[in-house]
View 1: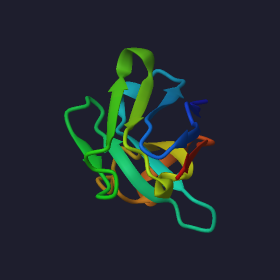
View 2 (view 1 turned 90 degrees about the vertical axis):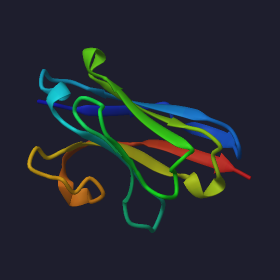
View 3 (view 1 turned 90 degrees about the horizontal axis):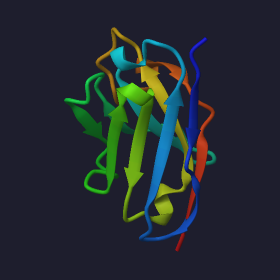
View 4 (view 1 turned 135 degrees about the horizontal axis):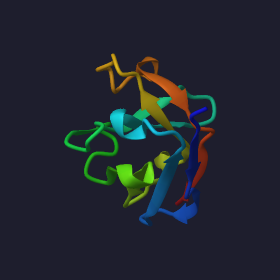
Length: 125
């Protein structure tokens, strides 16, 4: 059974950087687009970034564009989220997800079929 496991979260100060890692089990990782979402307490899950199966295309929420970078290493079954210039409003649980093969809705939770448990990111001011 395929699983996604996130790591790399923590407590940092505004302006700091973090790199999140999502490790996937299973042989078919390289054939799927992957995404990162975040969810703050009491708020809906929010799209952050997405990367196509071969890394040729990436997509970002406006709120993180220019600060966050998504990448992947298919040889390691891993997707990353490099987060720079962190702000208090970036505080949330960050989750990685596997996009449905048939979906082009990279910005929607409904475009994804498999989710990790998430890793907490807290940014203090």
